[in-house]
Amino acid sequence: RSLAALSEADVALTTYTILQLDAEKLSATRFACIVLDESQAIKNPQSLTSKAAKRVSQASGSDCVRVALSGTPIENRIGELHSVFEFLNPGFLGSKQDFTVGFERPVQKAKATGSQADPRAQLLREEMLRRLGLAVAPFVLRRLKSDKSIEIG
Image 1 (cartoon, rainbow, N blue to C red):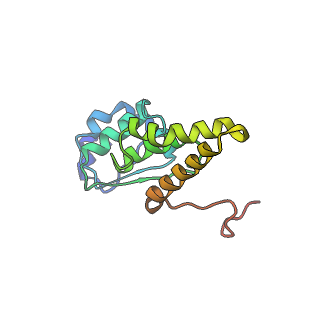
Image 2: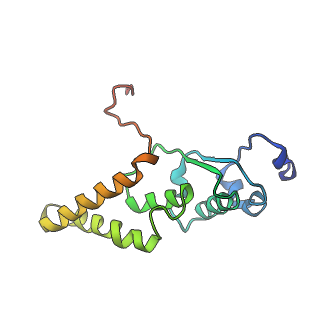
Image 3: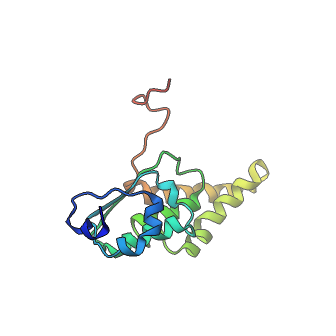
């Protein structure tokens, strides 16, 4: 279908490639809900995909429901979490710079030094992860491999 018919549709499905190519046109439609599957595609805030998703999301206004689905563990790199949250709830985790200084650097610094780390750095890392976990917990629904409801086989 054409993008002109989009405003009449109840549901619209697209790919990340089309999202990138048609972000300007898609931004002309106010969506009631935007769901990103495989949302790790927007983990890099500088990527065209991330910028396009956030542009369409912003154009839909603050009353647009946003959902990000991913099978990728959020612990992989906490900096990527900021990018996904900028789509979900812009500004919730502060600016990228504040997030980097307040969370990402202390966590990465302590992690990088491993067992050689200053005990204070390890305590700071644990505290930063605890605070971050408390902040995002209401927005994250996740299952672990250890959950009995998941069959691995």
